[in-house]
Every structure is written in C-alpha cells, then in structure tokens.
Image (cartoon, helix red, strand yellow):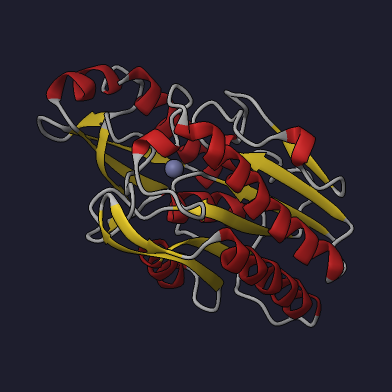
Length: 272
Ligand SMILES: [Zn+2]
C-alpha cells in the first residue's frame, strides 16, 4: 500500500504567524523542525498500520522546508518547485490514499490561522464549480481525479471543519484552536504528534478494511473562478488563452479535467 503525505506549513503544530513559516525569519528554523516531526508522526503511524511505501510532498512555498536529515527513513520525499503536481506531487505514481498534514482554511475563513488560498498576496477567493474552495478542496479534487481518497488531515479547527465539509468521514487532528488569524490555543508537539500518529494508524487500518472516505470527484468540465486582490493581477491572468474576464478582479475558465484545471489555476496565479 502506497500513501502520499501532502504537507503544508500553516497548519503545523504551534504555527500562528507568518514569521513562523517564512524562511527569512529566525523563527522559521524552529517550525520546520516541528513540521518534520508532525510528518514523521504520520509516517510512523501509516507504516505501523501496514503502509509499505510512503511518499511525502513538501508543499509549502518553494517546497524546501522539511528537514530530510530528520525524516523517518521509511519515507521518500519530493522537494523543490515547480513540480508537475505541486502540493500533491507524486499523486500520479500509483498512490492508494493520501494524508494532508499542516493544512489551513481558505482565505475568507473567520478564526483560522493564516487562512489563505494559494497566495495571500494575490488571491482573495476561488470558486470550484460555483462553490468557494481552498487548498483542501483543490488538492483533494486532484487526488480524487486519480481515484485517491484523502484519509486524514491535521491543522487548526477551521481546516478540520473545511476538510469534513468536502470529504465526509475524513479523520481530522485539530492541533490548534484558532481565535483569530494570528492567534490560537495550541497543543504542544508532545501531545499533537502522538494524536497524528494514532490517527494515521487508524486511517490506514480503516482503509485496509474498506472503510474510508470516497475519492473526491468533481463534475466535469470544471469551472474555476479566481478573484484577485487587485485589478492588475486580474489583467495579467486574463492574458491566458480561454480565460474570461468577469469583472475588475475576477477571471474564470473551464477545463476538461481536474489536473488541467489545477495547472491553469497555478499558471494564472503565477502570472498575477
Ligand atoms: Zn497553503
């Protein structure tokens, strides 16, 4: 059984502000170590429950955050960017199921640590087939297009709620309870990581018994609308072929598959 562990940073144990997740700040070095330990908790849980191949995707920023020298030796890691599948790099390599570790809620969520959708300097909101979506729904839909269900998510309580909305039956580990964008009551690693470990074991055990969430399938063709922070960003994104300018800050497009929609979305945000 092969598991993909897709990892972001804003929902890692203890993270409450940008300095914790930006490589130019001294604090970042502490939190990338905690990030690696949150991932290791998921790796060991999955391995102990019988996963024999574990692929980690570093999905934050330029995908060079997890400390490979501290990574559990049962895992392999995709680092660096851009990669074809970005936050879920490796999803097309015969993966049976995925975990999302350190995830965060979409940009417009109240009481959600560092909530954003792909880029908080560029994107205010995204809609997938008319429904507001964040990185959880986008990445889970890409996984779903390969028949891969998402079994587990860790992050703050808002990310956990968002995950349960998109993926009924998903296991969640709320490692912090946000009271604002930059404040939360946090579990220490000595508490959160055993919880991640246990949930990973439980999720894989349930999967092997045939009890797990269904892969997230979206209706095709996929319709995506992106609302940018300013009109210049929409000007740039609207240069892409087959993009419609909807108003000052919004562009929209249609794609024949979820992986294609994901590529167009990433291209538009990069241009903006
Ligand atoms: Zn993110």
